[in-house]
Image 1 (tube, rainbow, N blue to C red):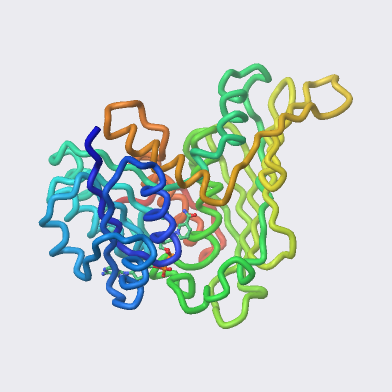
Image 2: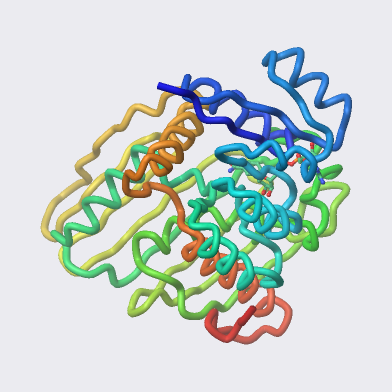
Length: 334
Ligand SMILES: NC(=O)c1ccc[n+]([C@@H]2O[C@H](COP(=O)([O-])OP(=O)(O)OC[C@H]3O[C@@H](n4cnc5c(N)ncnc54)[C@H](O)[C@@H]3O)[C@@H](O)[C@H]2O)c1
């Protein structure tokens, strides 16, 4: 089997992980691209891969696929040029920090006839996939309300966060666009797109930045009421999601890698543990899912359509926090 040629643009925190995890699949020949020469040298030394400093020049080599791992404001223009060069695209989340160019990106994809997937990695978490499958089967009836409660000490995981894109909303920073978006995108994959959001957020604790590190959202996903609460300073790294349906509830404790059911009339949760693997495990699964998609298998990743919807959620949440009013996601147009 011949290997796919893959260019990774942006080899910072997540780009290096993608480079390593795509190589781990054994299915690719990878090239690393970054504007930072010291980082490029590190990629060449660590992974023995060819490197390129200029992404536009690199695209001319006609890679089968390009993985875009730069900050959010660069995702859409880079994806459009990548498609024009004839390559498939896996682009990091969030799709963007504005709707500028998103319509053109859809047209570029359709013109090129290439695949575009967005790297909302929760789609390949085995524990989430198992719970979502149960919910989709509808044994408990329609979900009426749901909650997502999530937090971690961001500086413990990303000590240099204040020197990255995170410090500025215009580059995709802040809790709404950078962290909450993972949960929102996954909830939309279960409950359907959010119609409207009422959002409050604040900068409460993280040093050296002014963007919001705490966010609370009350959202409507169709008939379901969903409450999101996230902060980026609490000591425990925990995410709990709960779905309350007509005939029972489903809870997912991501930090314990288990999901459970509690049927109406039962006396306790029935838990289903799902082995998590290593930190790279979901990213290797994501790389394999993307390569499978290139081979014509049904997509298991976030589509461009779904990511554009989650982008509208992000922008509606920011607008709601600014105005204090409920904002309809559909009111935001490219
Ligand atoms: N899925 C996840 O779990 C996850 C985790 C972290 C980050 N992300 C997302 O990935 C993206 C990147 O985040 P990060 O933490 O890796 O950021 P980072 O700052 O660590 O890395 C970004 C890299 O892009 C490079 N770059 C910027 N402009 C460039 C250009 N024109 N040409 C070539 N290289 C360029 C920078 O030099 C830098 O090395 C963001 O959108 C972020 O939200 C996703």
